Image (tube, rainbow, N blue to C red):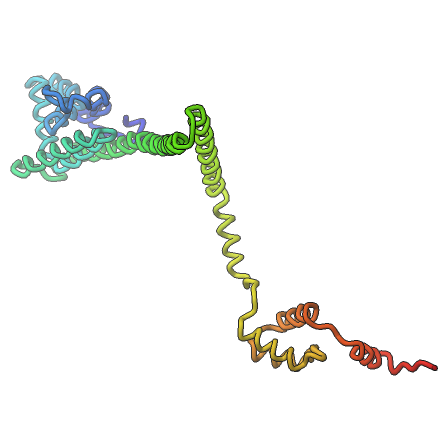
Length: 319
């Protein structure tokens, strides 16, 4: 565990040992159904956590006892257990351990685990605890294994979260298919024969499958190109939307048109005045007059001759 999570136990032989909570001490999913059975529930409370923690130091305690030649290994192990149980970081260690147990557990089991933790806190209020710094090696031991349990819980939760998301997605798709098939069956039953019911149901299921596939493809494309789409929307919002001219501006142009209908070609001064009165730019005014002349104005023959005379000079025919 130390090598797996990149942490190191204290250098002291009293606390250096493999992981404190071997897999056999964790609640397996097979134990969860026993929650409602009469038999005792196989779960760890504060005493069981203390026992699991003592596995870390039992062998080291035995070695210390043999070296010192005084007292049994069990007595030394009990003394170390007492130190762990009265350490200020013991509640944090218990909380981290219970959080590991709650990963993937049913709600009722998670509730029971939380009750165990609260009960341990209540019992600890009446107990005498040591202070940080009294045993630096034990302090480091407790901090190290608290960090290990936090990392372990994170690693345990990740696959559960991914599996839960996957199953929720599958459940949504199945519900869509089932609801579509049910609606198809009811509508086809009211329409006709049993053969038509089956064929209609198959068509509806195929349509639902196609709809689901299209939605998945749409979601995939949106995820892939959402950034580009947002950029394009932003650029389009900057450009001035094309459309009909404002009603007041259009009426002002029509008034000028009606007054100068014989020759609806505004001069530059006229365009400037129209731009000031309507709030339009020169390009909009020019385009409006061009379109208006194409659609609603046809010069008379006399007007055409007058234009030609102004351009080429007077033209006389010899009789």
